[in-house]
Length: 422
Ligand SMILES: Cc1cc2nc3c(=O)[nH]c(=O)nc-3n(C[C@H](O)[C@H](O)[C@H](O)COP(=O)(O)OP(=O)(O)OC[C@H]3O[C@@H](n4cnc5c(N)ncnc54)[C@H](O)[C@@H]3O)c2cc1C
Image (tube, rainbow, N blue to C red; front, top):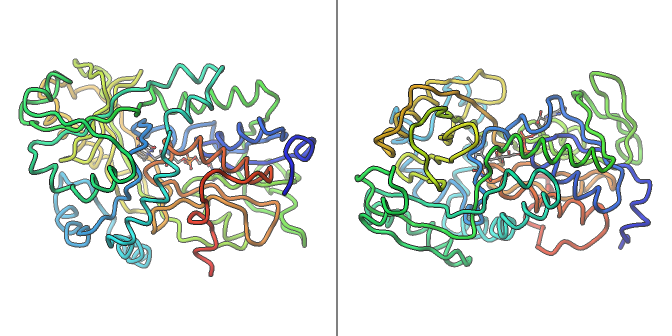
């Protein structure tokens, strides 16, 4: 096993991707003694990591496809207010992925996937605090209660598979009934008569600014952030030697691929093809909502999250299958306005901004975290689907452990890229 410190001295690590995963990896690697450069085609934090719902959620380890999804999905697709949509022209291309995704919804598979993700999501708030500690990134973190609201206890019971799994992995729930829901948050409509609140959760007041603050911290401590697009990777007998970018070539020593939903081509080039898709998600930010919820709220009916942020009240959610290239369909985003009006009868939805982003998703809902089976100097960190904000800092710590030769403190075998290539 390699020792950190001396081994890291003078070794250079290049990270492709300045989202929450890439920047968390970069900061952890820098703290382990490496000379780190991050490359992104956009400024830091402007991919999926900018527009998410901002929840730091240790509870979010149960994947989206759970038993019964096969029967529920058609209804969701036909419902114009539903959380799921497909660009029909894209469907033939992604059908094989979709079949694998649905095959992972059996109770046995979901329990296995959840067990692996639970170790990654555990301590999400504390991991963020440790990463941001001593930097101006701390200002964006809000440890807080997280609430799931339902119209009735019967609706909650329909999700008992998910909640039982959460409880099995140590998530403690508090139950609110009738007026207790509005006592917790007065802006929630009277139609919502049941809620679950979770302690030890939290939200980020501006996810994009969080990543930008962390990137500034990396630079302050001597790291580099380059605004370039990686077009290709030169590979020699020992492994990758150079990145081909839109502004010339860059020599490589150690490489971390953390390019979110765009990681598929890079992984393929490195001999590890992966079935990576994008689950396109949307948000609207109500810039003058007229209400100010104190906690982040998940509406179980609409499958969206309402989070109080510095720029307004962000309403985020939805899954649209449509690939990386198609332009956003903001008609989807506007259904979120209607959902917000149902949850908060007094809300003003007239003034809003809208956004679409790409969740990087593998069909088993597990990310890829680990070393390349082909090249000693290549590591992967992508595919964090709906929970990349929550699990970014721990992923970064695991990557720094692996590159430094330290044994990670959780089992990372379920995240190996080999699972797709065996
Ligand atoms: C609507 C929505 C709500 C969400 N809510 C939550 C939530 O509440 N909590 C949670 O934990 N997660 C949430 N997520 C998921 C989370 O946002 C993602 O899992 C996470 O942001 C992924 O981070 P990333 O760094 O892998 O990807 P990204 O942030 O997309 O970063 C990848 C970066 O790689 C760069 N890149 C790609 N290709 C190249 C190239 N060739 N050259 C140079 N740079 C390149 C991109 O420009 C990009 O900046 C949500 C997602 C969405 C869409």
